[in-house]
Amino acid sequence: MLFRKRLPSLTALIMLEAVLRRKSFTAAAGELGVTQAAVSRQIAILEKELGQLMFVRKHRAIEPTPACLVLGASLAQSFANISDTIESIKGSAQDVVTIGATVAFSSFWLLPRLADFRAQNPGIQVRVVSQDSKIDLDAGQVDLAVRFGVPPFNDGTVIASRGDVIMLVCSPDYLERRGAGPLSAEDELIETDAEDRSWQSWNQWIARLGLQFVVKPSLRFNHYTETIFAARAGQGVALGWGALVKTFLDDGTLVALDETAFAAEGRYNVLIPHKSRRTVAIDGACSWLTASLHG
Image 1 (tube, rainbow, N blue to C red):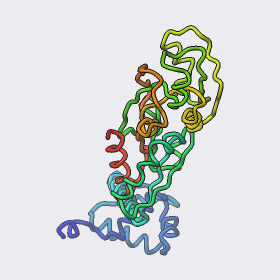
Image 2: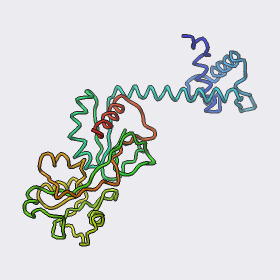
Image 3: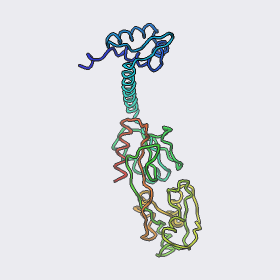
């Protein structure tokens, strides 16, 4: 290839980058597993080929020349890109992707659809991290996450999002027992005590409707999944996020109490960490999640 004729020895370039980073011929030699004399010889060859000094030799110290600093910066970036590409290839061979989401989103939306993802992406292993506390993307715990809220977020980039509608849901048996009619103080309300208040509470719902009665939930849970299971069991009325309860509305285990519905203030956002690695598995999961979320 033509570029090979234009480039100095790769060995010399690697040694130059190491010397510049370690600020020492001896330290660079130790890192590379060669002698100090070998490093000095390669740098001297490089200087002769380039026609410029790379370092000014001082007593017990070296000082990089401007040309060395420019070349060193380019080498550092190029080697970093090569390293990232190699890591991506290694990751692709492993074919593993880790997806993070709340317990409710994982249980009600993600898990029922994973069979479709696996059918479209055979051989890719999926690991799901489900927790209602905020997943720290900077910690490297997941490759991508679905987070409900209002972007932007300081630890990740949004690649897809969708809104939702909140409605009142209950079991068909409960609706038959109470009869038709708007929500009232006589209804048995099921509350989710979520730490994240981007999820709407009964007090917020009542205020939005302009009703005056005091909210006294008959059941409280700290996971939305339990709230919905209780509603399906006929224990009362719950706030239903459309995307999460659609399966139960479709199979008839939940019904809408009335026609009241409001757009949720937050959105379901697919996030990738700012320092995201790229693999075939991660790219496939991102594409699938983006398409499915809007589907």
